[in-house]
Image (cartoon, rainbow, N blue to C red):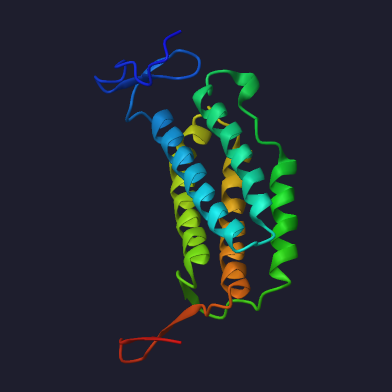
Length: 191
């Protein structure tokens, strides 16, 4: 095997799945793979910011990254029925436990929160938005039976978790969350 970092195989707009199937790079599968890779990377960035601030949840972000790698593998091998359910329900339950644990430390959000609240908080909000997009590109694979529904459930819960830890990051960093308050005259007011 060569030590080269490129093969030129994808220069014509196609690529291979882990099973060797050649598909267009804009196929549903590669859209989902790209979205999960972007989510994985952005959670990594958020984790680095969280570690710099010594936030306790940074280890959970690393665990989530390993699960996203498993999800990415399942997407790439979606023709293999034995790998369709690579995200067990226990992973989703784990997220739900973490959400409950951290939500106890936060006041309930009264209004829409404008993403910000420090670099760690903002990076987690971006990761949450990427997670929501990842959900949208995974839906067709679930509908077609190429991926088990639990992957979609996990991503939905992950977005909720990222929202909670974004809020927690603002609190831990002693930053103020900006709340969107619509005014009757249509002008925007923040607090």
